[in-house]
Length: 159
Image 1 (cartoon, rainbow, N blue to C red):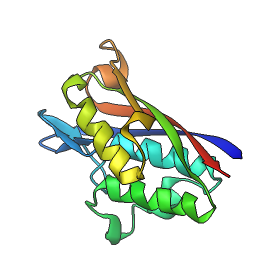
Image 2: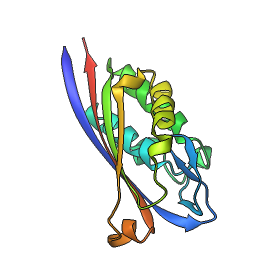
Image 3: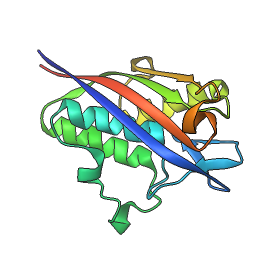
Image 4: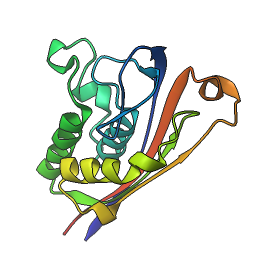
């Protein structure tokens, strides 16, 4: 069995009156993430972790922000496409461990739904998806609610 590990990171600027989609869930908040797609920072970090583990480059290589096909698209679709790409190399998802860093809103009420959405997009068990969150303790761009950050690690494997 071959096992590989990947790491992903993403950051998005927060702007007033934008939707705030994280893990495929619309968060109730007055600010939201700005980006070419739906700006789902969690899905983007996981995409990069998967692609990196399989040595397939990064999300920007596969889904350019200058390509109108990806404008406003659900990042869960991009995540499914990344799973398909690693599958073409014979890999399947082992697990994902992700960390969100945002000052507000508190995401504990949303985590289970995020896990279900991510697992469905990745065609894996919910038990294989871990999502945690922390704040910026009022420091930096996260603490000032100017941006949101996500980190993700994943394990992929093939027999």
